[in-house]
Image 1 (cartoon, helix red, strand yellow):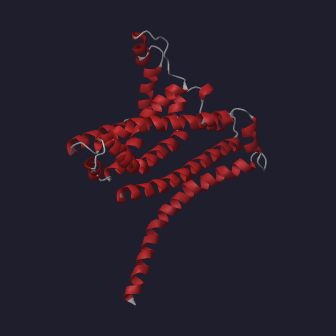
Image 2 (cartoon, one colour):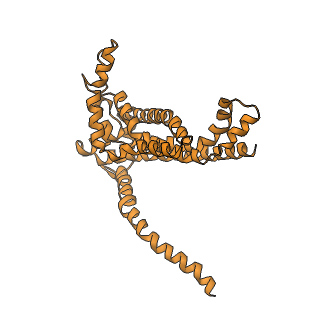
Image 3 (cartoon, helix red, strand yellow):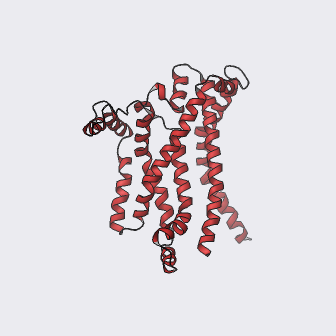
Length: 285
């Protein structure tokens, strides 16, 4: 009888520990989010007016597409830079790995405003980037106020969010599988492509999704380095709230962005299941 009560009391204790976190999420996340969605259907009038206006104004859809394309480009660029770096972290000595980890975490020790201001100085006219291109005969390379300038800065900001998931996933891959493939006559590049790369796909998808979703809602860098003519969805939402007082329209934009995020998570979850099946197949082979 006492043994049967023990698991029940343990579950009750765990429930009491979870209760404060659940209440915090409900009050400070679920309620504001629900309020935003509710206002998108009720202000200034009840119905789908705010959502239909997004399709009619000719600007919101264009900015949404620009935001999605920017997010994909940023995620792809960070993946291209982070994959070899994370792979190298799994192959070096522990001391070198610690140093490489410090290099990855170094941006977190610097203020976000300081990093963006540094990019502001680099990308402005007569900045370091403009001067560097002038040395090779290309004048007028001013990235400030353009989507390209925002993308470059966001790649640097988001790079740690790609490296860490990649390294976490790659660290668990058995390196002996590459040696086994080599012993069977496979060249190093073929062993990497057919054995290591499929096993690292879950980490790739996790890092890509994390960076893509963070980019969709990123406000500071586009606001400081971009321009109103090349704005992204977060800037448009801020303009609707602060300048136009259009809380319903801003809520509709936020709701659309939420739906896009959930769709991205759903698609990635399907691919992760598929890649997990591939990983089992490769391991068994």
